[in-house]
Amino acid sequence: MTGTIYVLNGPNLNLLGKRQPDIYGHETLADVESACAERAAVHGLKTRFLQSNAEHQLIDWIHEARESAVAIVINPAAYTHTSVAILDALNAFEGPVIEVHISNVHKREDFRHHSFVSLRADGVIAGCGTQGYLLAIDRVATVLAAS
Image (cartoon, rainbow, N blue to C red; front, side, top):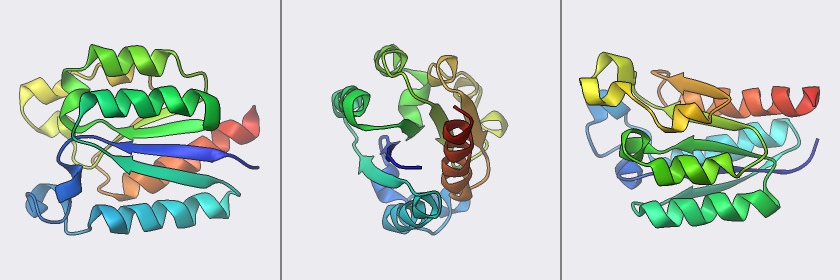
């Protein structure tokens, strides 16, 4: 299997390991990036790991992925609950999309229970900590192998 998985991260994830470690843990985004690259390599895949606090940048990367990615793993963070624009961009992507959340959003505030991204996602992983990214990559590999 070959190809690149875009691993996209939304707002405030650049603070992973520093911001609310009781919710999000002590691993940094660099730790997650390294683990994702290693896991993807096991499946013969590569990752393009990106983070932005800007909604438009995430949308631009989703558009870019249309031409250069076999799948998208996305943790849209707060944009999960607010961004129809990210949903629209994901709807234009033809490969698998896996939505990841480090915390269990269903055990948190009510507004976090709704996800626009889930309307497009082929799978949703929540509450597994940063391991959720690795589970998402494994799922992408399974889906790609079956197609």
